[in-house]
Length: 172
Ligand code: GLN
Image 1 (cartoon, helix red, strand yellow):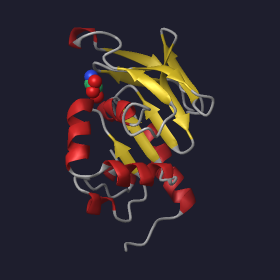
Image 2 (tube, rainbow, N blue to C red):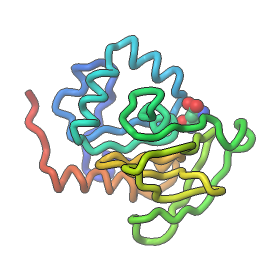
Image 3 (tube, rainbow, N blue to C red):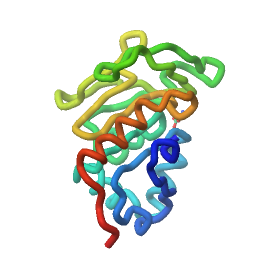
Image 4 (tube, rainbow, N blue to C red):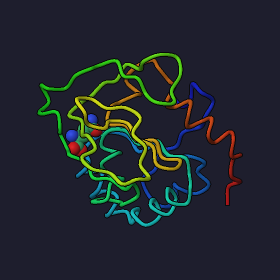
């Protein structure tokens, strides 16, 4: 999806992979596994620094969990894992996101979390059943669903456009 928008994505596995990144995507997956990998590779500090330092970031599903107060402590919020229930309770819905133009977004929720509680710096962009599932804090956009599983690239485009506004970094 990022390549289709003209970006050059790179997989981050170790701290040197973060060098000169203009933006970061924290994808879905499994937050315990991701947290263990982040600890094993010594990525927690560098990742935190990058995001807190204002690097435009898109976090989806498990990525939202990884950024919460109980994990990397970047977003001023707590999440509830598997909040909608087990795998069979996964679902899709049309979601209107504050600040996203062009009509509702098809949102795919797979054993998704929701935001349980948040501070004042966290802006809620969308809710399901009264629970926040899309939030923004500074230049971090975090959603509980999987925008990469549809053909709708609007959230990825927002990330790429934020970078375009900022200008890109020169490699060290
Ligand atoms: N249930 C997963 C977790 O708790 C998240 C699922 C996902 O990323 N689709 O980490």
